[in-house]
Length: 108
Image 1 (cartoon, rainbow, N blue to C red):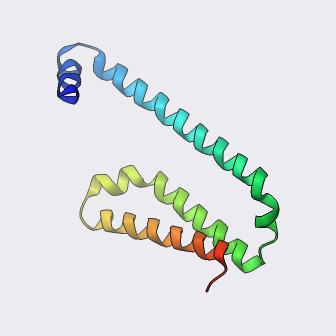
Image 2 (cartoon, rainbow, N blue to C red):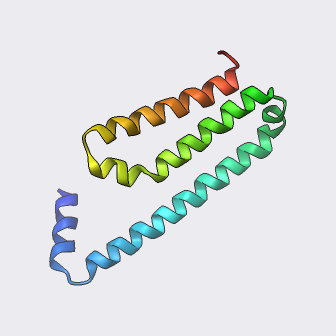
Image 3 (cartoon, helix red, strand yellow):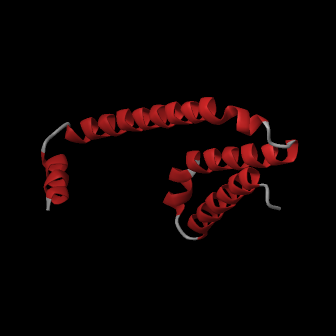
């Protein structure tokens, strides 16, 4: 019910749609900043453990992380197209998660 009232307010009140977009962009930037801050904290706490990984495991770990990052950047495009690209999005996230897990756990 609350979402319905908010949607109605966006349609009725002039200029509220632009304000909604601005708030969404600000929240997105804050979200990315918080994720970066958390990752930096984890790196400072566990950096020595990651550095101690073998080259192959470290490449698998970072490769999975980069794939996850690129998949998240491409999320609006992949999900807006629908169909098979939604499955590709799920597959990419699954592969990146698997790579990070295997890089950390060491199982091949």
